[in-house]
Length: 313
Image (cartoon, rainbow, N blue to C red; front, side, top):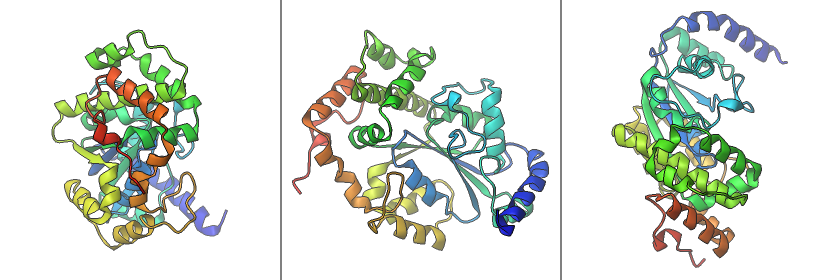
């Protein structure tokens, strides 16, 4: 470990004592919630460049967070329900520390002010009401067309389709939503596309029900950010109470133009090209399978033929 990293680790250990004593509602907060592979990492990373902000990427994710817990993935709680494991993770995150080591600059901000804490979550996508009730702040839900989202999840791991579906199906509160209860009736499948599509419907139907009760929540669409990156991000920053400065502008410019080096989890890509990339990869059979699940769960979006039109290029 370099000397700089050693200093940072020591400084973080020293800071935890006073950060733990801060109220969990003491910082301005933004919760960006979306489905896995919805583009939330790209969008969250740009929001995280807001001036005087601390960005925490998926505190629930054990691969990226020092406090992650896979057993909590896809957990749905109503506002005010107790859950000590979630409280352990997010009480720290709401105070702006915990999932990762803070930089020395972030530690200075913490010592001198209350920087905005931006928390991006996929595993905690269904916890919007729980987050807002306990921590306050603004909640934004990110939507994306199901075809590219499901294609990307298939590449990430087909086994997740069944695992996530089982996590969702096992929660009685989720079945209180009529469209979900009806969609699950006699549902049996081992097909990963069907399982991912059913999970997509369930997760977004839960968040849509929450949005009906919380009209102040913001709704973002991945495709809008791709087609008009700067205008859409500027609007999102303003609506979330964030400052779009030079760091955000530079990060956006770098991440929305491909340099040919993008990996599966990479952030450097041609954002306009991403919108139409699924057109050549989603077969007619896959489209039919996904649309059948959208209909089964009475999903209110992406059922029109024009939502599935392919570009001719």
